[in-house]
Image 1 (spheres, rainbow, N blue to C red):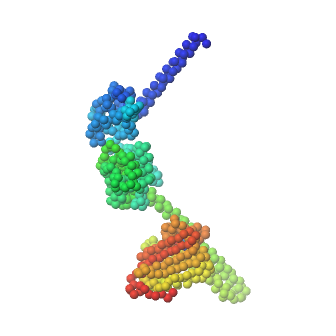
Image 2 (tube, rainbow, N blue to C red):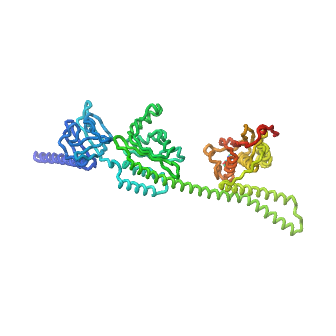
Image 3 (tube, protein in one colour):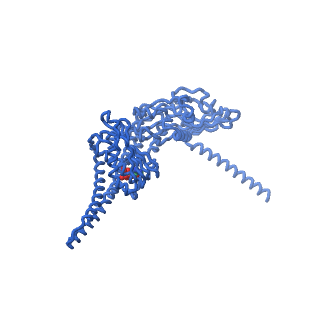
Amino acid sequence: MSSGSAWLSMLQQDSEEGAEALLNDAVLRLLVEQTGDALVLVDSKGKVLTFNSEASRQFRLARPERIEHGWLPGCVWVRADDTSRPLEESPLARALAGEWLKEGRWGLRRPDGSVVLLRGSVIPLGVRDGVAAGALLRTREEARVGMDAASAARLLAEAGALLGAALDAEGRVEPLLRLLVPALADAGVLYLGPPAEALRPVAAVHAEPDRHVLLLELLRQYSADALVPGSLPSMLDTGQTERRRLGEPDGAASGNGHLEAERLRRALELQCYLGVPLVARGRVIGALLLFRGHEAPDFTEEEERLAEELARRTALSVDSARLLREAREAVRLRDEFLGIASHELKTPLTPLHLKVQLLHKQVELLAARGQPIAAERVSETLEVVQRQVRRLTSLVDNLLDVSRITAGRLKLELEEMDLASVAAEIMYRFAPSAAQLNCSLELHAPMAVVGRWDRLRLEQVVTNLLSNALKYGAGQPVYVRVEAEGRLARLSVKDGGIGISAQDLPRIFERFERAVSDRHYGGLGLGLYITRQIVEAFGGTVSATSEPGKGSTFVLELPRGDIPEEWLSIPGTS
Ligand code: ADP
């Protein structure tokens, strides 16, 4: 290569590198201008290296040559109560002293006297021996200091649109909180029941990503009340809004176990608190908690009213969605029940129909031949007919009982009777079917247990428990015990059958509730419901204990009513 061409190529390389440097510089400038944040870079001597146009706009200040001791010329850094901060508290001064402030909030009185609330961070650069060679300040103007009427109306309209948009209200609470944070508060948490006593947080938002994580952690790890101890129970109690400044977390009161909760609360720096209960149909069904952090102004009375209006609308929407869900569930249960009921009612009808048809044919045949019909054959058929009619009657009676209970028309006719004799009589009635099912029946009733009850209803209760014990008892013995404890009568029915799982136990006394598949066991899921209603009408209780595969025990406890003292211990004859 000639020396001329080598020189040319060097020149070309130089200009390429120069162009690249120029380009990098332009890109950097563009980025600095376009970030949307104010950016100020100063060196340790106060020389301004960067001061973008957003900084000029936010601070109402043309780019200064120097920023002495981190103090923006003509501006004063102020606290939430508008008092001036000392020199060393200015963000840039703190960063030049080596401190890194991640998400701070500062008030700034500008040269024209107006005050702006800024949120941002300052980063010390090139720190050596606790002193920085420079500092970078980044700030963004806070959207509000108090909400004006137009923004409040806009917020309510947006919330209304959100709440009315879909029927699943609980799925909409997080977007709702995002309307409030950061417009009205730095953080918000929405709690919902039911039941109200067990409020749980369903959505939580913090405007700052780092603190959002802390907030979620605090809510996940600690009780619902951990955020503002004592506030939720008091709101549930009084249904009143709470608006106050939060004090320092009280270490002594919260105890060692809650040190971590306290650490998280401290890190969240929540200072102003507005707690509004969600009330629907006179009941507290949830709570909306709003917070403002460090250096923020207190919530105002107007903001409290706005939050209350939002809480009212949210409560209404959540409650309506819940009612709708419950109504749908009730319709689903009713349809399911109608399916089961028609199947149950039809089951005895089929053999009934067949037997009557057969008898009819036989009578016709014998009549045609001029022969008399055998009495045993008629009586055998009538027995089947009677059994099925009894079954149908009991099903229809159950249905009628449910409608009576629902309408509050369950009437009791009280008379004196011995529970042990009632149990013995029912067991006697069940003896044939127990024998058929291979279940032995055993009664333990050493004393007569006299009380005042309604005979038919008491028989119905014992019948229900005993028939269940045989139905779900799978050929195992059934033990019935009757005893008294002062003015309380107790009857227990114990079987060794299929049992009931712990999660099914609480619901089997509810209407239409069953814990078995209807392919294996017939039934309407009404027996225990009716039992409980009757027992409660007597002023007593019925409960069950069970272990799947090991059997169940149902215990009735009935007050013996107004009986003479001497009847409390009559020896039995069982
Ligand atoms: P049904 O027997 O018609 O279903 P009940 O109201 O009498 O209705 O009982 C409700 C449910 O409780 C039953 O479906 C069954 O799952 C469960 N259950 C009741 N008694 C027993 C028992 N002794 N052993 C096991 N499960 C039982």
